[in-house]
Length: 462
Image 1 (spheres, rainbow, N blue to C red):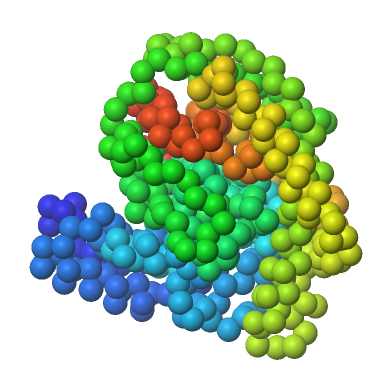
Image 2 (tube, rainbow, N blue to C red):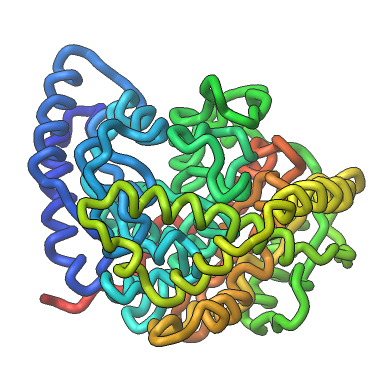
């Protein structure tokens, strides 16, 4: 509509701001909305279009997760700490702006992205547009709620254990975790000790491809570099990948987690759809190595510096006492961690990666559930300790966190609705560096079983 002149950028952003104003009291997706700056950017986009500018995202409103710097706004990492505003955009945001995107605000997350539920003592519960009594997942839950409710067409996320894929699964969205090194994480050279990547949540596969075409690329100083794809992602999703070998693995990667029967039914329905599309689909039973000890060590190793940096940038001296009790519990563990633990985790992660990625010599993709349970009711974190919060997060990360350790691409995609009308989802895991195949097969499934037009129930009137 923007290209055809049926809608101006200002009209689109005004509509976005009205929708946020009407719905966010119930959803609690946004920590801050900057209407003045968004409208000014929309006006600039209209002037650029009048001059013949056709950048990929010109005038498109996008929200940014609150662990990513936006110039002039504080980056709180989901805490009640208010550091001084960021002096400049993170690389991800800068690339979005260079493509013409309009940044409308920052979305909510749990403190430092530690949990699979977007709930904080200071910011309250972020609620799922499909059922306001249910969680959006985490940690990019505010971004997922904003996109699922139609407040913005896309929002950024980060993923260190499933934090893009889990909220996508809970909210009926497409969430691709790209290969480590595909998108620069600057100004942070490494997020979550190499576990986390930055990216986006979208409604459709094509939208995801278009966004990753814009933001992909490394900067000097980045510790990892992913080889460029053979063709742009948006071009790739228009082409079929040909028959592929796809393994189906219903078993969780960690012990002690039971797969919900409705999620399992969605998995096998997706496997049938892939077979109908001409792929060779077979049950596989991978022998997953124990990896949570390594993953936890790396995540805790990152928490200490992140928390210390945030508190040092705060405008008041007692910032650490503002953090939630469970964050302070994890921070105490992080600060007591022996220096040798990080080196051990790095060595062990390399061995686990070699063992796990070896599976992909006999298959092109792995199909798994995205999460083990249907979205649970909000309040999972109310009054609980760090240990209890981790245990309650386990069914959400049971299929996702391993692929952060190995660094390879993985995507959550919608797979229908439960009996209660809640989103179900599956995960496609690709070979190292092969987002192209993940995107192509995701697009095949979307064409076979369209989900982008499926909308959550209307929110209650204000």
